[in-house]
Amino acid sequence: MKAAKYIIALLMVLSGSPQQARTQATDPFKQRTRILFLLDASGSMHARWGPGSQETRWNSARSILIDIIDSLDKRDDVELALRVYGHQSPLTEKNCKDTQLEVGFSLSSGKYIRNKLNTLNPRGVTPIAYSLERAAYDFPDNKARNIIILMTDGEESCGGDPCAVARLLEERKIVMKHFVIGIGVEEKAASAFDCIGSYFQTEDAVSLRQTLRNIVSRILIKTTCQVELLDGEKNPLETDVNMTFYSIPNHLRKYDFYHTLDARGRPDTLFVDPVTDYTITVHTLPPVRQSEVTLVKQKHNVVKIDAPQGNLEVLLKGKTISNDLNNKIKCMVRGKDGSLINVQDFNTNEKYLIGRYDLEILTLPPTYIRDVDISPYRTTTIELPTPGIASVIKKYAVQGGIFQIKNGRLEKIYELNGDTKSELLALSPGSYMIVYRPRHSKSMHNSKTIEFKIISGESISLNL
Image (cartoon, rainbow, N blue to C red; front, side, top):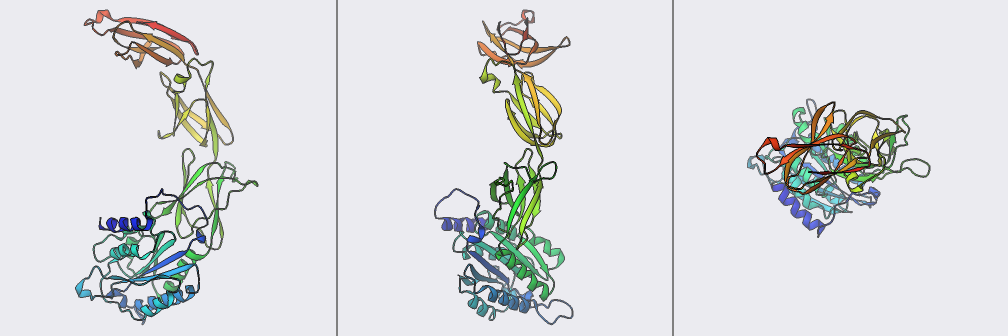
């Protein structure tokens, strides 16, 4: 993909050397903010807003953008830049590389952007994807809050894929967030912009002005949040679990936290950048997801997530003969739909969301326990007898298997390894039979059987 080639090359320039990827856990507002206005100056911007309107979309966008830039020009924590597309070649040329960084980033770029806007005239096509590709090179580095505000009145007209480019820019941490303002975009075309970033449709100059103000306010006004994990009584007392924040719409991992309560029993205040909407995954067993979390500006946001948990303890009862063998016994915890939730070691205690689970315990033979109830603030204990040990010693190579005897019937649980002279097996207490024959024998009449019992915590030797 051409976009990938451009952006990966830029990433090498921005990073200097390979680094381990990490998420930003400190206050995002301590970083410098860079806003690149990516403005549509294609020929269609000369159109008026609608029947009865005397003002063109271009005149509205230009004057509103100048007002916003004037309000930002005196801030010492914000750098602005302007890239324009569709303004250098007439529509008849169909110039799909018609894009230009007209004013680069600086703390004093406002007056230059204002002057440039007053000289521009819409003319050509709409190369959105290519403009986004080139915008990657407009940012000096990826150490700031790099944000693109795209203002357009129509779809990509050069066959590019703006969504793919936007995602790459965010994946490579060149751009933190894209905002798209549709200027009178037709309803059937508006859905194409959802994958680029947060999309806002405007139908007149008044809504365009308010939308742009709201976006800039969201970018710059400090916001805090805390995540409350609710127990079975809706109290925010659950804690000690990992959380991941993923951005919307591109589902990129932005933040990782280990949930903690402070000395007063309250969740920490988090510094999470409000420009992005999030899906929060709480890594309980099974995980809980809260989608479409929007942080409201100028407010301490409290996000409440239901995560009531209880405990499951699995134990081996009785004396232990071989820790090496016992440690191989695992408890597979499954949801009622059969999905694997966790593989838990024996003699451990782990938290799960309240509900009912099925257990498959990898004893020999396997043990199944259905409909195990996990309740809030309660430990459910499953206790199994410690296996016994069967030492199978072979004088010669054999073929055969081990069967469990149940109600007079045989159920095969294990195939003997004919290539070894001895095998050490941990078996659940019960009655068993080995049925085997010498490997070299060609007659079924040479089949032999050994019947034996396994007692919890005891060992037995079986000579074949």
